[in-house]
Amino acid sequence: MDAPLYDFSPIARLLLMAILMATAPLAWVWLRNKNKSPLHRLRALTFLTLFLTFDLLGFGAFTRLTDSGLGCPDWPGCYGSASPIGARDEIHAAQSVQPHGPVTHSKAWIEMIHRYLAAMVGVLITVLAISNAIQARRGSVLISPWWSYLTFVAVCVQGAFGALTVTLKLYPAIVTLHLLGGMGLLMLLMVQAEAYGGHQLPLTRTLRVAVIGVAILSLVQITLGAWVSTNYAVLACTEFPGCQGQWWPAMDFQQGFSVFRHLGRTTEGEFLSLPALTAIHMVHRWAAVLVLAAILWLAFALWQRRAELGAVWAWALVSLAAWQLLSGLSNVILGWPLLSALAHTLGAAILMCVLTMIACRAFKAPPSTLTQNFAKVAGLKK
Image (tube, rainbow, N blue to C red; front, top):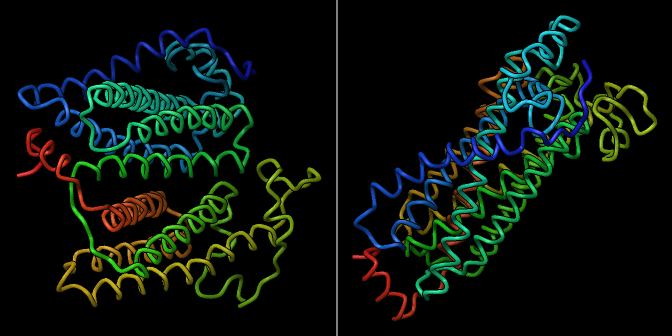
């Protein structure tokens, strides 16, 4: 059964549900820190929002990997209802026509739970922005409130990409941007969370630049990985290190990396060929070698200064590189199992969080006397 792409009739109920869901983490932060300073509560809210955003990114990957992105073919509700319960007749009709199609009862619930979680995170980020604005007016902040304002804008853009993902029927470029937006939200929240720690990493200028360079390379690789996933190109090569029994299989780079096209189609509307899917897969595989080498080099450089910095950062990068390598190989050799695919996405998210953390601590200027005194009063430093 067809549905209009946009139906805003349940928007009020969805907003109310998001606010009610957000009251639980907000109440938890308040009760655990009711005798602490407002700045301490703001810190706790930042860390909790970061954690829930990571969970949201993981559930978003689960939604994509279970082909549930079109479980409700309209936005923001499900056939004009606030939940699949109200749309059960429409879902049943669609499932009767296509029992294994994009619209089923289970897929509808997965998709709507993802939207509920996204709306809840949006509410928390809004509260975070308002709280930062209030504290900034009082002159009691450890980081510019513009970071929280930028995060608020980013989550609004994410909501728009989420809507376009549904209404444009999993348009690969939009789905890829949606995943990158989730990574961007994590990084923005990590920057804010790091502001409360006061930790520093005394890296040389060369190492600082190297951290930024590795982060950029990792983001490019994540973009390529998202392009592989959104085009379902993982299974274009089911062996390693070769592909289709060859070291250099037939590849169509032009069609594979045409951005403005629909899912599974070329720019002319024809079905996307195997050589195009192979090109997408192989470029991601080749880039992985470069990124892996860059991460290991950075880890080695940090290990050489372990007496000053500690060995934890080097080990963290090596462990994450190994995690990504093994989960990526598992996707290819084992036929893209759900667990491996989720592990690969979440590993990429953790890697970007770690690189952001290292960069924040490396570029953090020594705190001023005023900031040190205020942090002591707020109970953030001993």
